[in-house]
Image (cartoon, rainbow, N blue to C red; front, side, top):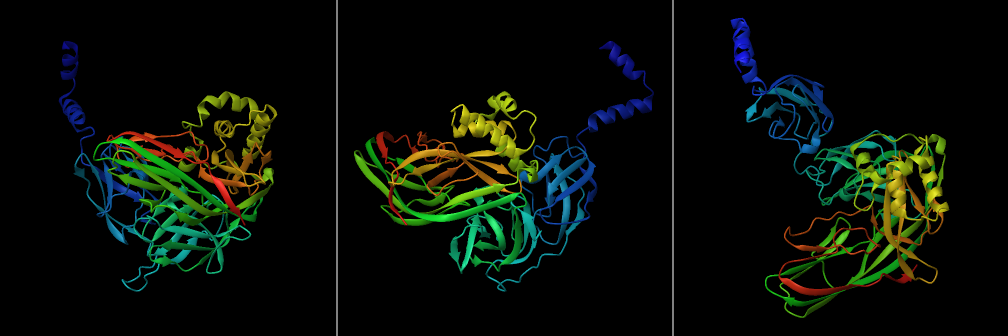
Length: 498
């Protein structure tokens, strides 16, 4: 300690003062913005802010665009001298500032390009599209839809694309497929700008925005498949029925029970046409692909049966892939999530096996093909392991759970898989039918990937059954007031094929 004090005071007095001030001012100064780039930005694009005293990590710090504060997912990076953040929808110009530890920087004026029309109140009740950029693109690539009346939040709104199916959903004479919030394709939704990836199954034609107020004007867009073709054809319409029987044997008040009943998927090769009938009205119609039923304050020996019937259009998928034209995967947050390990798909444990199977191959299609052949030849026909090996080999893959229907209309729970190719979309794989790249119209899907549901009440008890026709983490949710109850989920039955 004495040596330190002696050495410290041996410094010339000006340097001592500088040293002391530096120690006490480090990280504690008011943030200062020196410049930002671009000087005139665009809503939804990244803005680079340079200056001092932003802090090495963000923690509770934030950027303000006037009164609008971006969400945490809007920040690409944060360091003491540079912040990269997406520009939110705030209007045409605003004061830009950085706040750290309760200290706000001096504000600088920031503006956005006035390229999006602003409609006066009452001028248009419907959403309006002014432009789609780029107008020509490929599956999985980002497009921006500019206009007005989209709504500050997406909620139940969607974006409709022309559909590649032979005979698709009809709305005003046009076949279309909808991209929704739970599809994972959206990056930004605001009143005047939507940014999303072109969903699998979209085709050249038109794009529309659909909100609670109605559908927008159509805007042309061209979707290319440069690496081959994907045909969605041979529609079959199924009438699907199943039920859940519940009996609460012993209860105390208050209490509740939720049933999370899976719905058939809406996707590139399947459309849920809606209910034929159901024995009770649900608490929530559609939440992340399930219908939620609720029972409150049940007495001892309470019993109830929930029975539902649907109509589902299912198509066959046929792909022709020119693997030499397949590009390496583009890195993105969505792609990283699609490669991650999960409870069901442990990609981390398969790195060595995947490496031994694919070797030095870099083409994503050929990697998936090599893994398929290896498992098929070894009679290890497990769709979940195929997905794990693909992810370990840096090929995004998802399990698809549902039922397989035979020629006698008998069904059984079934899991198959799909892997992703940039600029092409999802490619189906099924070991049971020996298909790689194709899928018949006897598969009815209830979940694509793993559906992670949040319980309605944090203190409730949840049950996750091994029901392989839907990969969801919650099937039943009950309160502590239900001391004893039983449930029976029926098998899925096909009551008609059209």
